[in-house]
Length: 187
Image 1 (tube, rainbow, N blue to C red):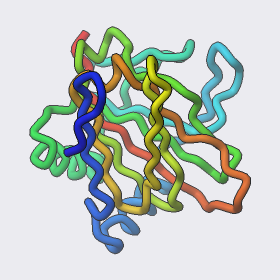
Image 2 (image 1 turned 135 degrees about the vertical axis):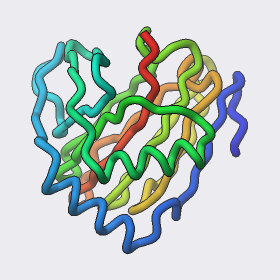
Image 3 (image 1 turned 30 degrees about the vertical axis):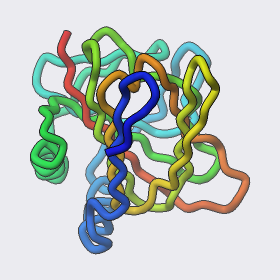
């Protein structure tokens, strides 16, 4: 566990899923998920998304409101494994599909009201590795991780109060990537 400035905590496990497990899950999600390109406050999102959640849960950010899809077996299995590893409960999963290096996620904090005060967010990466950046809001301090195939990154504690994170565009040739972020919607 990495202790962050301001009370945040990170757990980075590069081999959370072994290569075979990660390969199977990547292909299952490519085939089974109804991917969509949403449009928000700033126009079309530069990635494809899907959102799964327990019945009655919704999630809004950047001018997009998601109503949860019914869980599919591969996500249920991953959810249970993450809950045991992270010692946290999750009732939703936001999936982001980055088709190539042009798809990205800009600087933001997962600080929406629905997530509660100090959310635990467990992120599993599948497919091509991408750079993940964190930036402290007051000091400008930055941290970077290459999120590889099968890796887990858990953000917890006060991370969302004091840090922003991003998956920047890449000019180098990168293949497709799926990121699954599990959250607990409380409101």
